[in-house]
Length: 474
Ligand code: ADP
Image (cartoon, rainbow, N blue to C red):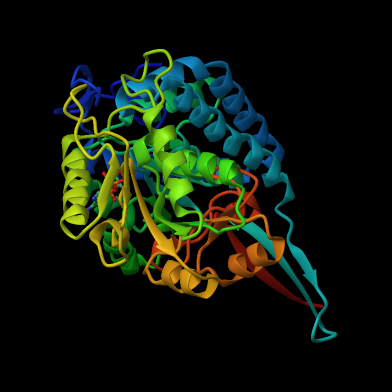
């Protein structure tokens, strides 16, 4: 499954240039991948466009059969896929395996869901007319995905798009192309017709991005990445009025009330803060702990953090790997320095590790304030930034004081309070008494500047259909 060429129109393509893919743990070269560039993106769009009529006219059952084969091949090869993912991305192999199975679940679920693309017969407003709707695939879908989930961010888009009858062109992140190409190899084995799925790798993200957001043959653009890049790509999509789905940045509050179960709160916090070394869009960013349980929470969190085993993704027992690249480490270091300079205290960690240049120690900071950069920016690293609060209204107000609105976490054993707070938080997803909530069967997405649209669930399927209204005179 290790592929180093671009996958366009069912064929593996070389390019004039190549880009190196390296293990973020030690800089070791994993391979050099063909740099498809904007020309590759144009060829891929042409292929997807040519493949669309036949694929969209298949019955849902025919598409489901092929997609379920793809799903099964991913599950059957999940150990190898996990290893590829870990090597290029850095997360521990067990975590990577979890991503592969989670990623595969989107293909399975949408293969089943596409059989239920019902239209409607509408009670007419005029006795001489009959009204109905049909749902049809939007057309060619282009996708740009990030490096933090190199498998699942692709399947969450390609799964429902292909199930709906769309064809896809994917530009994965430059850091993690191998997971995307491995998926193409399995798609081919599963029998996805040529041109239905295409992957273009490129160092010229902006050039490829222009094709994927501006080519009139593309009907819909779907993106996961930073808010800044998302805004730029949205503006590019305006030129041809593309449909858009945007999964952008977050600034997740994690609220621990005085009536929380402390063990639940700690394990939820660990899961949402240190998984993938904190490089997760729904990762906890601001930890608000009620003043009466603050010290207990911090002590328990510190003990858990001290127990994390840092190292290479393939080492037994490792629970946290490196960050993706040096730039990310420097930024995290800067956030710590900024917070400490403004009065925050390092409880544990706070520095780079000797394991390699991309390693940063899992860190707990207390005395954090909402005015600090660490509370205002998406941290995207293994820093737990703890603040105190006194009452419910105050913490809701502070939690909502951000342009982001992706995920929020609420820890409370009081069901009335939990319900009140869930309703009052301006976020697309709220996890109550758990740190893990994302699944193929439920809608994932944000409000405010965290995005547009949903991935997963019936909402995630709807993103790839147009509703056509037909009115018949009788
Ligand atoms: P991250 O912080 O996850 O790297 P980015 O938004 O920078 O977030 O990257 C997400 C994806 O967007 C990656 O595939 C990256 O190559 C791509 N990307 C970055 N800048 C551009 C751009 N100007 N045009 C198109 N794609 C871009």
